[in-house]
Image (cartoon, rainbow, N blue to C red; front, side, top):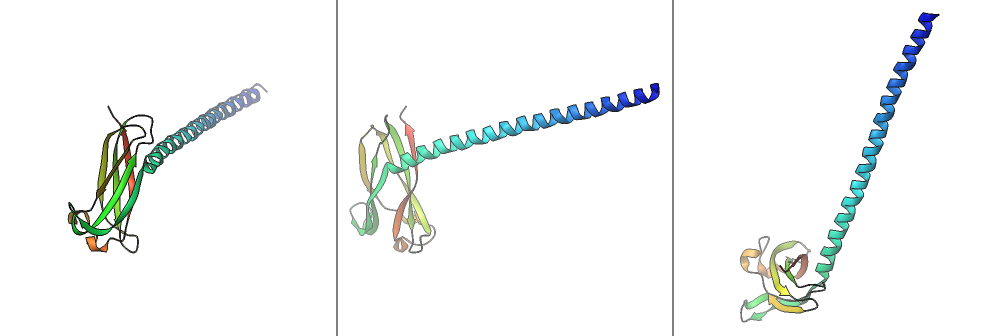
Length: 158
């Protein structure tokens, strides 16, 4: 009888140990899963905040006109893009906006960038630009049919 009780006791101890380890492992996994899920939400929230900031900055840049015309700086029959950058933020900022030139299928032919430095809150900078031939890498400047703002970086003035 004593042998049976010792055997039963040993089995109970082993089962308890295995169950305890298994439970701790599950709790650890659940804890890790919870942390991973929280970290994922934080990353999404951080990404969402970053995207919201990029969207806000992108709203600050407008294409106000575009097309082929003779231009004093860009030359005869250049694809000229007129743009405005308005600082919609609360503080002065530096802006870099990338413009993409598109063909009739909407494919990107090339890109160029425009800037506004130390633009005060609520202030607007206007200008015009045109791609130089070396910026159009997937066709020729004569293939340009449209232009779009692809990215905007707004950086605080230090």
